[in-house]
Image 1 (cartoon, one colour):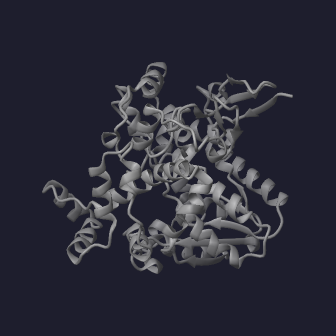
Image 2 (cartoon, helix red, strand yellow):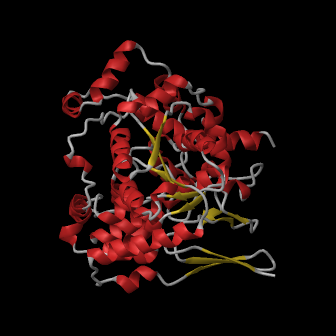
Length: 456
């Protein structure tokens, strides 16, 4: 009997499949033949440059994933058939929407979900616009458990912590801060969930929920503001998308990737070129750029709901992934969305304009360095990785991720001050430990893959 799998308008649940074996799963590790696989040159190079798999192709030959609005049919003989369905986005082109209607849609969605779950409601709260809005929208504030982690040297002074505490005080919500730093110890757990589909950068979420869950009664719902920054207007329009490689400009990688220049497997850019030619005109539209970013990055960003659901049995929900809400936000007047003006005024009108309250908090972000210092990373295996990655690049990464002498610590601290960072960059003085850390997290899944192959 044939089986059918479908993705929604965003591919919020990633579906992987193996064209040779017919295996299908939401976990890429379930569909890879570890003792007999080949790398896909373009899939691998795109993975290295973007930090995650893109355009339906993983780094493994014949292992692919469904794009948005698609159907995968597994026939009785294990033959696979992929069908592209109508894109619901097309029905919203040219429509306009009222801000009050958008807020009402979000409120209705949150209240409906709130009534469907029992117990406490967990909201990861940075104090930013998205978590601020969700905390406000919950009807029964007594059920809310807000948790925040900081990213500065003194995590208690991080701006996220300061904002979240003030927000919780205003709304009368129970709030706690969570201290992080041991997340590199969860590399194996991360690999079990995501394998070679994306870089291993989200272990901090495992540490975060590992500490959060001990403070909960169990069976809790989780309210997430995933992608709110994209839809609301924080991410600006990118000009000069004039060639296939320019798609990287809207990949929103936060510099978390390696480089295909270090790859020994060379390839053409057929996937990127094909996608660019198909969407050349639409890439000039702000909304289409945002949708492309969201759809491309979903294979990575899904960890924000997958980690708490798969490892900690929380019940995640995000109204900002619902198509009607998203399309309504994207239909607001452009001038109101730029710099999130429509949301800023909403917070001003409801006494939640934290930015005007003269709150002091550190904007420094040293969390990854803290993680490397607290749980030193095991050097990458040069002998394994040299099959596909240039050894000199691997050795450079291993050298940079180690504990740094005083000079490099001072240099890193100087890079945390924007004005000083600008001067250092103009002088050609760069802080490279975080660059190496990003590359490490991108190459580590490849190393794990090769280890599994050699283990038989």
